[in-house]
Length: 516
Image (tube, rainbow, N blue to C red):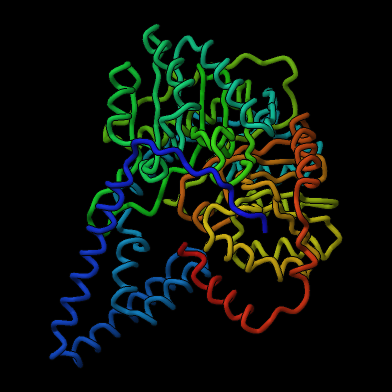
């Protein structure tokens, strides 16, 4: 594997100290609970019985939950192996009641979505007639997830994030009515400062500018004065799910979305955050590879609604989205079919994973995939291997230089089964691939924020964009063709039998992979 880059992160003002304080506070609370139980050791027999009964009841509760089976298994083993610690961690991170308030709030908001995202039936019927397989995929997103298919939108794919950033700046300068920006991570450095300058100018000109970021995602980059600085410039700024030093909080569900909307006419999304490493201004993990999309046309409406869903979820009084849902001009070159979509951990539908599975199930010739992490459940693994076994050319690109060594070790633990079944595995030699994209059969692609791991597929708020029958599909295919020569194929290293100790270690890593 390539060595580490010598360059380290810039030293900037951030909230790492606050994160450490929160972690210490939570650990102290866990320690206090464990210590309390130990101090009651004279009542060991009673405590042991009570703990066993409680563990059994919690395990039954977990088995009855509508969550992924591998996720259930990880919690069950942890609770049975270390009952007291396991129960404490489950109450903190696994119990649904810990996000009950947000669940109710999102439930109310989601009930309103169909009225804001109507389907043009002629567009849906045309797709069904042209390609029933793609029509079925669109039917799922429309009827199950609530996101309509559009036929009058132009999609531009960016395999270079600097090109995406410059296009984004150009559109921000044209804004006349509103700018919405929602990102998992913002770094108060070079890339962001160029955007902030434009946002401040537009705010001063009367444009409604809103910035929304995730506290955990940005905690290594910025601190509370950042939000106050934006507000002083007339930019509305909100923080999603701030970390607080108490147990049983809604801390495990993060906002991982990346969205920019300008006047309801143009939208941007993709895998990149607004931090310098995403644009190769710094190189903590070698050369960074990411991608993004620009949408022009009616499909931007869905991005607007997705943004306002999260914005409204942070306040008790719900803002009416209607003033922002303006008709979009049909751009030159519009065509094909486009579906921006979102995923939430607060419902029972795994939209992000289902989109990937539907593409795999419908693939006939090839499926190419990039993902920074590969920690998948049995269903995803079965579909990948089944596609390869029926003759589909399935290729997956993962990083050559990881950002998290343990997670990368878990990622590699999945290689053997996939490679043995005929899935080809590539590692991006120059550095870290952060792009999350699929392309299949030169007819359909998706690009967005959704990694192939349990956090993205089950725990985070995510978004993506499915598109077909347009030039952007070919653009994604060309991006893969340029990537493969930069990668090292490791399929042969992992196909076939592995040493017994390696298989044992992989089993342990994969057992607890869903909790990472």
